[in-house]
Figure 1 (spheres, one colour):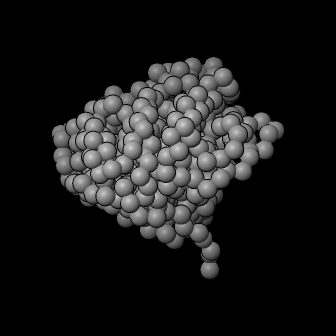
Figure 2 (tube, rainbow, N blue to C red; figure 1 turned 90 degrees about the horizontal axis):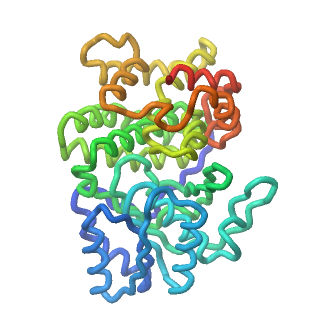
Figure 3 (cartoon, rainbow, N blue to C red; figure 1 turned 120 degrees about the horizontal axis):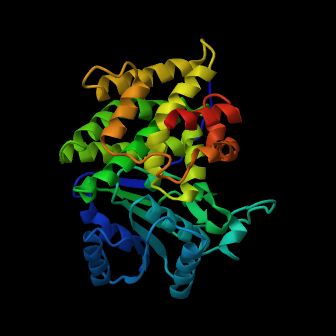
Length: 382
């Protein structure tokens, strides 16, 4: 029988209104809190006020955009200066990644760069992280359930993942109400991110019975929910997407991803929303992966299953012929940016494909792809 391990948050609260228990849960962890937050969700002001009223000291760090080396350094300095006992991140995936990185690196010796293993340098050991609480306000990355934090290295045009099973949240509080009325562009990009993560985890060469069960049970409703909420605000669809995001994080943390995320790690260093990049590349990756598989390959049957699901859910007019075309028409209809919008001219395709071939996510792709096959995903996406 196939063996596997399972990594997940120690405790998860899920449901509309469950954020009401956040203050009691956090104050039980430590009296000194480093709060990592964005500025778009007003409820965080209430959380900060209520934590102080409960007797906690709170040091606030504002998150803006995806974390880079300097942002993480600043957060680590703030945590060390106040000698905080736990880190709480409230926001989208980038904010949660920043919180994870700070929770792991604040107790560790040395500089942030010492722990990333860039180039020939070996990543230095990380000390036991501070207790970490993740409260997502978007439904897409599943960062509240994963064990890595993506950090940008601008001077090298790279994104590096700080990885350690101990980075998984001590507590995840997933309240779908915090995602209500998110902008359509954010809803589309984050929803596509969750769907791509579920699909790639299901197809992954590292998939296991637990991740298979999560993905199979979640994908149909997630695709349908994204289609519904793009037409009109729908609380039930929002809740479904929040669940899909969380479960996609569990799936990728335990099965890995694939070439879509390998490409996204390269393209994302040039700018653009990660989920939007994944959603734009997914159709081409399904086509290329299927063509690269033998007729009896286990993954081919799974891709056919995914393609059928995309076609039946997204092709309301009955004119798309297959799942990848239905997905492409769906994202085009809702104004998803193109590769050119992400700063990837056609002349750069070979460079991007070459870098993506060695990306960590690509190693879990269901079939090994050469650089030309990866390049063909970009060609099909244009």
